Image (cartoon, rainbow, N blue to C red):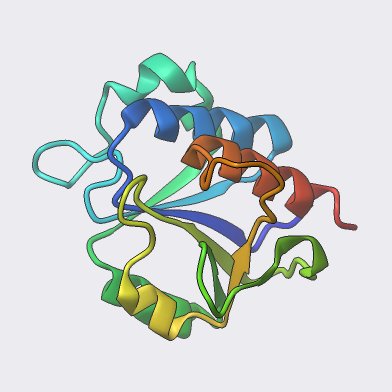
Amino acid sequence: MKKSVYIALENIRSLYNIGSIMRTMSFYKLENLILIGYSGKDKDRKNINPKIKKTSLGSQKDIKVYLIDTSKDLVKYAKEKGLRIVCVEQNTKSNRFEKHNFFDNTIYVLGNELAGISKTLIKNCNEILEIKRHGNHYSLNVSIVAGILIHNLVNCD
């Protein structure tokens, strides 16, 4: 099991999506979640919003949650800990998801449902990954992307 892998959620609006991602992480025994910006935080941005418990169904107890204020703070955190940053985003510089070698010591970032990942993280990441689209719709729900990512992280050994 990859102990030094983190899933980071940047400015995710939906508490339901965050709770769903926590359940998926717990199911696959991934333990590190970083909430960036307003993702899943209470009004003061000091704690996890208690409403997440409804969709996480207790899985928040299985996960270490790190609260980080800004994308710049995440870049600093990654450098201090010696972690790579990989963004999962549609981008002209993205690599094919299915050809990626999943690494330990990596933060995998998922972004806002509408705006995507911030320019700061895109500029400072080690790699950008994109899931190949086969159909007509241009995007997936962030919790679905997280599920695909987490499944591949755990089953890449």
